[in-house]
Amino acid sequence: MWNDAIPDRTAQQAMKRKAILRAAAMVFTRQGSHGATLEDVAISLGVSKAALYRYVLNKNELVLACQEEALDIADKALTQGEKEGLNALDKIRIGLTNYLIEMIAELGVPALILEDNALHGAEAEQTYEKRDAYEMRMRRLVRDGIADGSIVATEPKIAVFMLLGSIHWVSKWYRPEGNWTPEMVAHAIVEIATRALDARPAPTLTTRLEDIARPAQAPLSYLKEDHAL
Amino acid sequence: MWNDAIPDRTAQQAMKRKAILRAAAMVFTRQGSHGATLEDVAISLGVSKAALYRYVLNKNELVLACQEEALDIADKALTQGEKEGLNALDKIRIGLTNYLIEMIAELGVPALILEDNALHGAEAEQTYEKRDAYEMRMRRLVRDGIADGSIVATEPKIAVFMLLGSIHWVSKWYRPEGNWTPEMVAHAIVEIATRALDARPAPTLTTRLEDIARPAQAPLSYLKEDHAL
DNA sequence: TCGCTGCGTGACCGCATGGTCACATTTGTG
DNA sequence: CACAAATGTGACCATGCGGTCACGCAGCGA
Image (tube, each protein chain N blue to C red):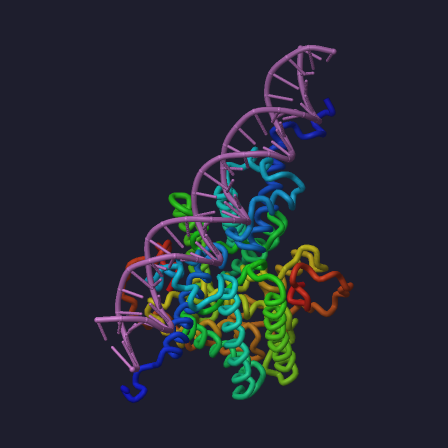
């Protein structure tokens, strides 16, 4: 019936779980995984707390799933960057830009910042290994870039920390309700952050915020001034 | 007696409160202000939870005090930068470097990352205003730098977000037990981060990590590989 | 030696929040 | 329509943690 135009039961379940993930990711990044209650997540979806447990085992699984998804996206984006980039710096740029864009599209949030004790046990180990592996890939790319002449001689570890800091921090100020598209934000922040490594830094940046009209809107949460975009 | 070589009662109280602040800042940055329990703080000081309440009104006051101190340090450092810097970019560099160094010296931790709902009410307002004011000062410096030719034409808002992200992220990977002095870390990270804005970026960076012998040491918390320094 | 003051502690209280359950309601199917 | 499966809910339980309190103890002046 309906010729498959309507998703069936299992597809709907998957969609609901995904919606929960999105909502949770949003709430977790705003309030921290500890500061957020499952009721917060439920309310933001317009359902009761108990309903969540049909699709999620417990809060820990939620946190883990968010983190896993973020890391998978980061990995995938970097793989794409390695395939398409002309040199190592270019690969990093593509990898980071796509990471941000994809994250916002998938989870509605630019990055998950995890507290040290948010996960426990074997799952935690696995996640940390994944994260470390990602950082290692990034460092290798920096070394490659120094070799191929696209990146200045620098300490890869510090350079990567600096890049990831800039990228992850986006979650503190980016608001999807704002006037900037995810693409614009991603390009702007990656462009300036990677300029720090560029062996031949461009004398001007392409992204100018002032060009964009920004109608006044009600302040979001505590953000009175214009701390956020 | 003892000719004032021994601090008196009130001085000791002040020292104890300061010690609590340091311990709390450490625990808060690691676990998030919500994820950290007052017992965690107490244990890290080798006292009981109840003892803390002789020196601190409640957990909220602790969070607030940490945040206030961090902001005061940032403000002070930036003021010094504005006084000593030769141009706007130089002022930013001095301001950020001193901020990191001072933070580590005072709180034993590079930066406090606050969740959105960690504070409430009037205190929150006040803190957020202070933080916004700091960001405004930074943005003004970026504009000054564009004017005086030390900084490339760029969007101040994005540039400052990028800088602050790099700086705050230090708290995720820096470990005071490591072999790097606070000064080395601060110089290294600020040098590369501000290179992103530099109108005439140096062709090489001064800081090279490899130069420093790093004896093996037990992994800290979950940090197996060398995610941290 | 006798208080007096201040400090630190274990035991305790109350509440918020993670998690469960029985039940009502809806949805899909023959 | 009948029935089963799935879904969502309010009420409830259990526990971890912020916060309090009565007590023991050390230091100190007379």
